[in-house]
Length: 279
Image: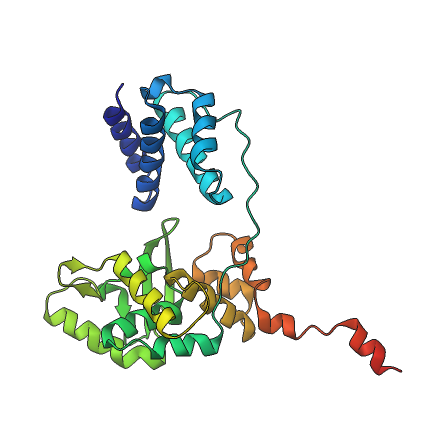
């Protein structure tokens, strides 16, 4: 079996299993990179070949990326060739990294530096609702109910739907945007000259806004989602409610924000302060 036939079979299996386009893309890329590096037919690739690829190409990558790569190889070989060539490979432990979060002041500054009205509305909505950038791109006019002031994120990560509140602050601008799109026979709330928006373009807008605002942090679209969740936690919102609005399947995913809130940490008084006050 050659590379192209193998990849096509993987794609077919993934589609039958109702995997997302994101998963399909990543799994195909992982298998393609391995085959290209080892230069063997798929059925001839061994566990040692996978280890060699990891050692030569992925030692500087995050643990999560290596785990994803091994999951892609395991899925493909188990389903297509009925063997697991990753069975004897130890998975690295996931790093316990604290996500980058903007303060409320930094968020205000970032939004104020975006001169284009439509760009500012897109970035503001990502922060205001905690959207993933893919959720913003795929938001359809039919997903919005301005009378009820709610919207629906359809089939997001993990094939999960969820409801979000349309923010009062943005409601008027969003309504105008929706009417304009409807008049132009557009399906999505936001579109570009060539139709559907590019995720890469929105990432560029967000990064540029961060630089123009003089924020000394790496600013990405997902930074806005992290900031949204952290600011909710700081304002006293129950973590289970935050789990729902983010669309997290497991509470453990949401609990990272319990460790990241600088405002919450500031409220913790060192015992030495109360100890010395007693003197």
